[in-house]
Length: 120
Length: 110
Image 1 (tube, rainbow over the protein chains, first blue to last red):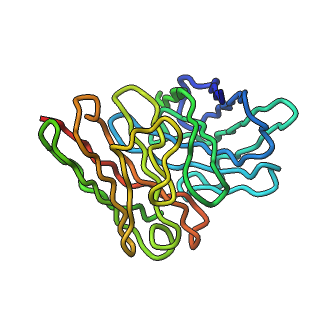
Image 2 (image 1 turned 180 degrees about the vertical axis):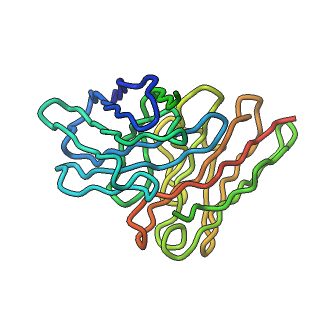
Image 3 (image 1 turned 120 degrees about the vertical axis):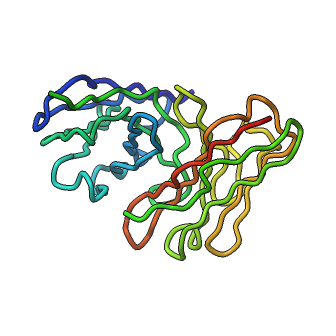
């Protein structure tokens, strides 16, 4: 069974930084693109970023471009999201999810999410 | 990024049929169809279908999807109380090189 477990969320002041991680198990990790999707309180799903299986291609939502960096360590089956210059509007539950195929289909496995709160 | 368009809410009676819609454009839904996700309150989303009408293993046949042009649809037959949830459509946008989501439809089973 494929499992994803996020960690690293917490309370951070505006302008601060946070690094999220997502540990994957039950799959050949480097075979799959991975994504981060967030959900603000009471709001819908909001795509943040996607990275290819090799890590060589990355994609970002305009709202986070230049502030967030997605990366992965295939030797440790772990996905990361480095978040800098955080704003109040970045407050959300952040989910990592497995892409079925990069640029196609859907996100077929989701973690439980980790909560990021940006507030002074 | 421009998202996909879904009606905010749909209400149907027990054992009835609900059809949810999702409208995009030729770069996303119209290009390779949509995926549908179900999310219960406080839970992560769950994939129901992808590329129009392919269901992951374990998903009930009561859920079926289709596409006509730039609009995707999810039909849920024989509505049950546990079907009450938020439903999201999603697609990869080839023009934006980005994944786009719909705003979600809250399905109420009366």
